[in-house]
Length: 229
Ligand code: DC
Image 1 (cartoon, rainbow, N blue to C red):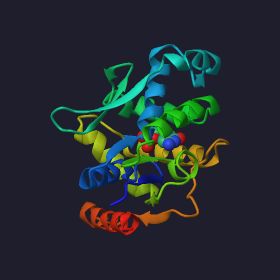
Image 2: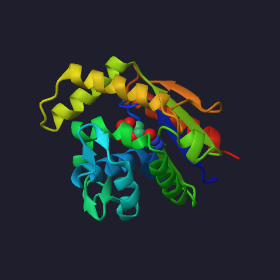
Image 3: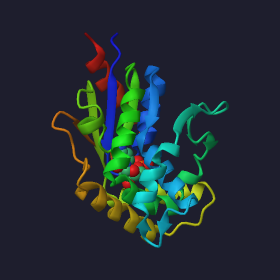
């Protein structure tokens, strides 16, 4: 069976990473969360005084971008992928609402995207990977053999994020999350560099009313169809 690159793009909080992780595990591929890389850059900005009110110190960030080393490793117990920022496990911190609020602005900076895309292409060199994000099928791997574009209604996505934050012990506000989801959609779709859009050759998956099991079965079918010679 040939090894391929699988690109999964779509709106925020529509379960892309859950499905990408499950697919990677099922077919024995490596999983890469490109959104985690932008989140790690946002966290770096917060920690290093590169945020002034709502403003990012873009020149400061540009000067320090070379100091930001983002890698992934498997959690020894759960086997889930963890994001490391300069060697430190930041998997929990990059999911906070503070980082979520900032990350779209960081991801809209062209010099940040150029650097992240370069690193992502290196991760995909050997094939046999699943990467999820916003521009994986359009910009990072335009030649990916299997591209999926995922969507779900903003309300369904806000509810999923709410449940996730609640489960980890936070005290979330649904309306604040819905606002954040819609604002991120707007920024992701209208930014100048690599805006979120479906690649012409991507398969569309609306999972508003799908169970995880249905989704997994659908993905496995697509995988088989795209790897059989
Ligand atoms: O998938 P996520 O919510 O963790 O992504 C975080 C942010 O990063 C989101 O605002 C979109 C942005 N992003 C991006 O611009 N390009 C990617 N390939 C992945 C994420």
